[in-house]
Length: 243
Image 1 (cartoon, helix red, strand yellow):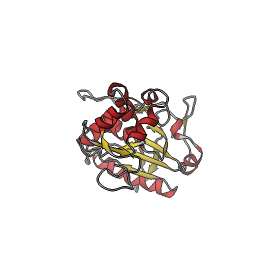
Image 2 (cartoon, helix red, strand yellow; image 1 turned 180 degrees about the horizontal axis):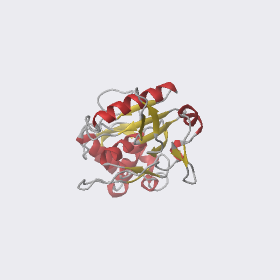
Image 3 (cartoon, helix red, strand yellow; image 1 turned 135 degrees about the horizontal axis):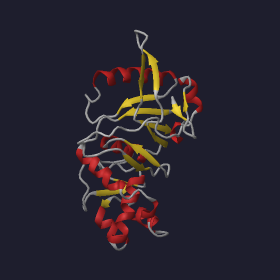
Image 4 (cartoon, helix red, strand yellow; image 1 turned 90 degrees about the horizontal axis):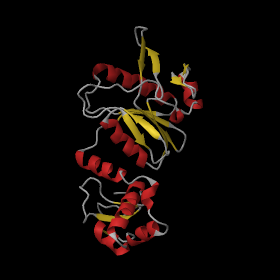
C-alpha cells in the first residue's frame, strides 16, 4: 500500500508495485509518531543525493539517512513510502511500514528500519523483519535493521553533513585546488592553509570529505591534525579504500 502522487491510497501486489512504482518519489504512507518526552521528534532531512527533503522520524533514522546520503550507489531516498501487508500462519492480516527506502544505481531497492537499539520494536518487529525480508529477497531487493552508529563516527558524519550543500563547494576553481593540495595525504589544517585562508577553505574541505572527493578516518575524532587524503586513499594505511 502506498500513496499516489495526488495522495490517494493504492493497494497493489508487492511484486508488481516494486517493479513499477518509484517509491523514492512518494510521500510517507503514514506519519511518523510523536513520542512525548523524546528529545528528538519527526523532521525533514535535506538530501544531497536528490536535492529534496526526506521525512525522518527519529535521531537514529536521521543518522542512517546521513550514511545513505553519502553512498555513491544510492540515487533516491524516501521515508515510510510503503506499507507491506501479508497473512501470518494463522491467516491473520499483518502489516509493517519500513522507515526507510533507498534506491540503488542498479535499480534495486533497500527497505530498512533504524532502531535506536537492537531490541527496539520487540517481537512484532522481529516477525515483521522476517516477513519483509522474505518479500524483498523474492524480487532481488534487501531489507535490513540498521545498527546504530558508534558515537564518534556519528558525530563526524553529523559535522560533515553540515557542509553537504553545494553552496559549500566554494568559488570556481577552489575545489580543484583543495583536491590537488590533498593529493598527497597531509593534516587537515596544514592542507587548508596551503590553499588559502582557512575560513574560506575549510568549508570546501569538509564538503569534499562529505562527497568523497577527499577521505579521512571517520572512526577517529575529527580535528585540525587529522590526516586527509585523496579519493581511494586508505587512511588506516596504504591505498585502495576510503577511510
